[in-house]
Image: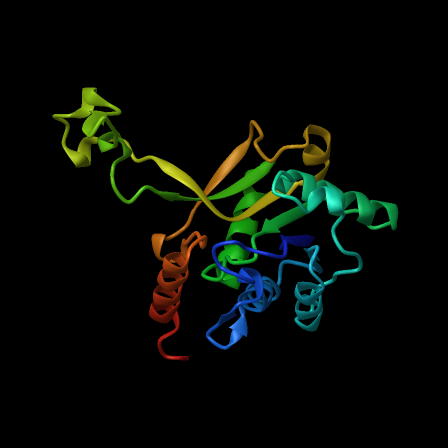
Amino acid sequence: MIAIIPARGGSKRIPGKNIKPFFGKPIIARVIENVLKSGVFSTVFVSTDDEEIARIAQQCGAEVPVLRSGKNSDDYATTSDVLIEVLDYLAATGRNYDKACCMYPTSVLIEGQDLKTAYDYFLEKQASVLLACVAYSHPIQRSFTIKDHKVCLQFPQYINSRSQDLEKVYHDTGSFYFFDVLNFMETKTLWQEQIVPFIVDENKVQDIDTPEDWSMAEMKFKLMHHEEL
């Protein structure tokens, strides 16, 4: 079983985001530690175009035998492109895996036990893909856009519905996916017909794209680890 962490260098809004210190350690180091603590993976492979990220990842027990290709290091490369490159490289060196996990390098709130529980569920359901997801914190049926300084309801049919009567809607956490390698390599996409949801607690979900996001992740981490810090 392999965990693949795509960690491109450079970040416009948070410089050096993937190796920025997070409570005393580079954030990717904490993520690698959690992946290893899960006990699920024989290999942790970091795909990066950045030598400093590669050095830190290797110090933490991850493999970085080669740097990512130039074509998969720009703003247009997709996660699938990166995963395919890694799996092709490994297959060419005689290393093939049946199952894999894509874990993003700033998913610092996801702990090893979360990954172990998700992996067991993935196997139990015999799914092509397991997607980590979370419910929207407020009913999306109440959403609206603003046009010409006016509110435009997205779902006017629910204007008089009680919140508790509205169906829950979920979104991708952007933290991790488990997937069947053969199926993925045939289809070249993680969006399969047999995706099973793995619902994550909202306190363990935080997209980190801005300094404000980073601060929010720190607050959530403190709540989870207040006795250790």
